[in-house]
Length: 486
Ligand SMILES: O=P(O)(O)OC[C@H]1O[C@H](O[C@H]2O[C@H](CO)[C@@H](O)[C@H](O)[C@H]2O)[C@H](O)[C@@H](O)[C@@H]1O
Image (cartoon, rainbow, N blue to C red):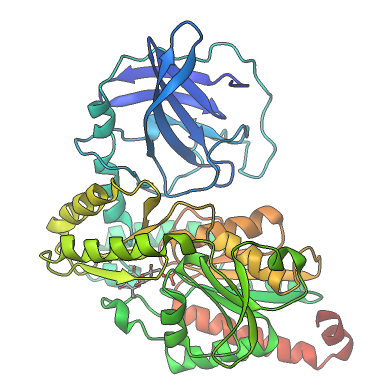
C-alpha cells in the first residue's frame, strides 16, 4: 500500500480530475472509484493516471478499469521517490476525445511540477510524511469524462512541438514582441550558457579527461527542413564530424532508422544508434554486461568489422511494420502528411499539413493507436512518433555505448551529448544525474531542459565541433596532457 500521504490542495471540478500537490504515488478515491496518479522517478515528471474500482471495505483496488499516460516518458512509473511533486492544477484536463496516450502538452517547469523553490530536481527530497489520509474525495465520474481529459493536450503539444525559429519570427512579429523574445532568450542563455562562449570552461574541465561525444542528427547535425528525406548534412559538417571522431569516440543517436542516418552521415569511424537508441551498433569490448545482455549479439558491420548489435525492441518489428502500413493508409488523404518507417518506430509528420488539419492528424493517429497498448505516441518537432513501450531511450543508449566503449565507471571520462529534441532530454538527464558529463541543447528558443549548455543551431554545432578539434590538437602538442587524456 501507499507509504506516504499526499499533501493536498484539494479541489474537484467537472472539467478537472483533481487539484493536488503530492509526493510519490498516491491514490484518490471516493466510494468505489479511485484515481491513482504516479510520477516518474527518472524524469521526475508527472506520470500516469489510472482509475480503478476499489473495494470499499478494504480500500484496496481490485479491478483495473483504465489508464492514460500523461507524458511522453515511459520510464518505470511506479515510484516512491519524494522528488515526485505533482501539481494537477497546472494540467488542463478537459476535452471530448479518447485516446490511449496523452502526451506531455508543454515543457514542464519546476513550478508546474510543484517543486518548492528551494528544491531542485537533484536535491534530496523534503521530510517524509505519514500514511494517513490517502484518499481524496472526488465526485464520481464516468469514464467518458476521464477520456475527455485528453485530447486538447495532444493538440496543444502538436502546436507547440516546434516553435518558429527566431530569425523567421522576426519577419512578422512586432518589434516589441521581438524584444521580448530576445530578452527571454537572453535570460535562458544565462542559465544554459552557449557552449561556444563557455568553451574555455568546457575545455578547462575536459583537460585531463577523455571526451566521448554523442550527437543527435536532425536539427543538430542537419537543419530542420520540410522534407525529411532531404535532411542532408553539409559537407563542412561531415568533415567536422569526421575530424572529431579522430580524437574522441563519437556516436550518433537518432530517432531515424540506423540505416537511414548512416546513409545521411556516411562516416565509418562513428558508432550509430537508430530508432531512438533501440538499434545500436557498437564496438566489441571486453564488457561482460554488454555481452550478457539478452538483446545483444555479436555480428559484423559492412566493413567486416566485428561489432555488437543491440536491438531491445526486436520483438516489436512485425507490429511496427503493421502500424506503419496502417498509418500510411489512414493519413493518405491528408495533404502533406508523411509516414516514415524508422524500423523500431514510426514517424507521422505533419510539418507540411495545413494547421487546420493537425487536429485531424492527431485524432486519427491517437485513435488508431488505441488498439496498440504496447506502443506509445510521443511528440517530436512537428512529428508524432510511435514506438514500443519499453524502458529504453537515448539516455539508456548513451549508457550502453559508454559501457561498450569501456568508458563506464571512469572518473576521467567526460561524455558530451548534443541534441535539439525532446527525446534528447533522456540523455541530458542521464548525464546530469550521474554528474558524469553534460548536455548541450540546440535551440533558438528558451526550453525547459536538463542540458547544461546551449547552441543556437547546426551552424553553431559545426563551430563547436571544429573548436573541439582545434583544442585537442593544441593539447596534443603538450605531451604530458596528451598522454593523460588518452
Ligand atoms: O533524433 P533525431 O535524429 O533528431 O530524429 C528525430 C526525427 O527527425 C526527423 O524529423 C525531423 O526532421 C525533419 C527533417 O528536418 C523535419 O522535416 C521534421 O519535421 C522533424 O520532426 C525524422 O524525419 C523523424 O523520423 C525523426 O523521428
